[in-house]
Structures are given as structure tokens and as C-alpha cells.
Image (cartoon, rainbow over all chains, first blue to last red; front, side, top):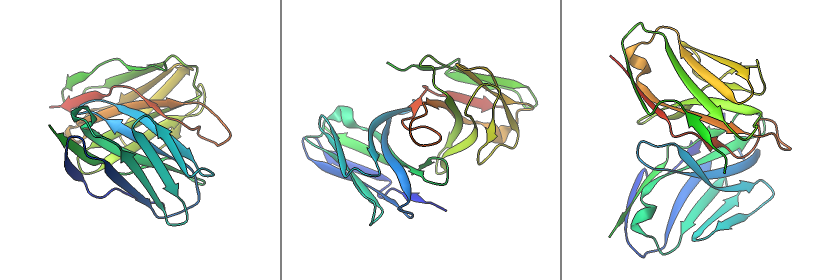
Length: 111
Length: 116
């Protein structure tokens, strides 16, 4: 069964730095992968969705990449800001199952 | 903008009470989902629905039921609330594209339920 792992569970980075969040999955047979943001006590907001045929997606300061063969995705955040502090979750949509979420990386941008 | 609205942000109930959590989406989405989120366990799927009057069990359906009488509304029911059902409950919706179960998920703001 597909497993989705996000390491580290928490990360602190000084403001202005570029950073990379990691997501790994065990089975490359997926339709797509999504990155979400969750603020404390709130719901999830979809940031980027990468179809299985794509290698990356960009939105503003965010860039998500997908390497199916190695079972990895990264979310790159450029020029981090305190407002980027949140938990970031990745989720994969396997071909034979429902969407599966990682447990997230809690990001803290230090002013 | 897609809007998924959950009726309550915070809810406090007593053990044994019947609890209704309501979710409404305004984008005519076919698929709707109920998750619970607990520290250390992540998001777990309780029930989902592809269409009106249709429901499917997720990974942890025990102690819950659902109702989908109208396309825009998906209700989660705790028949007899227990303390281990204290959690953040998240509703989501998506629309059918080329893949089954749809693509991009849109979430509500969540309901933090405490069962005392």
C-alpha cells in the first residue's frame, strides 16, 4: 500500500532564505501529487497540483517538482517570508486507491 | 472561488449525544469527503460520496455515518459521540476529471469537536 512520508516534521528558517520541503512516496503508479498549506486550526488550501505526466508546477514564489521514478517531490519556496509559516502537506492520488496524505512539515520562518 | 462551508468552527458535546456536522459546497462538485485530523496521525478518510445518495466507507468509518440528500450538502453523523471522537473534522470536495475520484481537493475550514 502506498505510503507518503515528509521529512523533517518541523523546520525553522530565517526570513529571506530559499527552502525546500520534501515528500517521498513508495509507489510510482500515481495520477497526481498535490501540495497543500494548512494554517493552525484551519482547513487545507491547495497550492500546486502536478499531474503524473508533468515534472513541475510553479505559482509565484512556489515551485513543485515531481520525480515519479524515484518517488519524490519537492516544494521550493523562494525568498521566504514570515507569512509562509504554516504546515505543508503533500498528497498523492494512487491509480488504484484514494488520495493519501503525508503528515506534513511544520515550517516556521524566523523574522 | 470555490467555497466549502462547514457549519461550526467549534463544537462541544457530551458522551452519548448524536452529533451532526454539516458541509456545503457551492461549485456543483460531484465528490465530497469527510476526514478527521489528529496530531501524529495525519488526515484519515472517514467517508466519501461520488454522487447524491451515494456513500462509500473510508479508512475509519466505525462510529460514523453520512448523508447526502442533495449534491451540495454532505453531512457527517456521530450516532453516539465518544471521547475518542474528539478531533478536527475536515470536509472536502472535488470535481470529476479524467481520473476517478476527481482531482484538486477543496477543503472547508474545519470543525474542532470536543466530546466530554
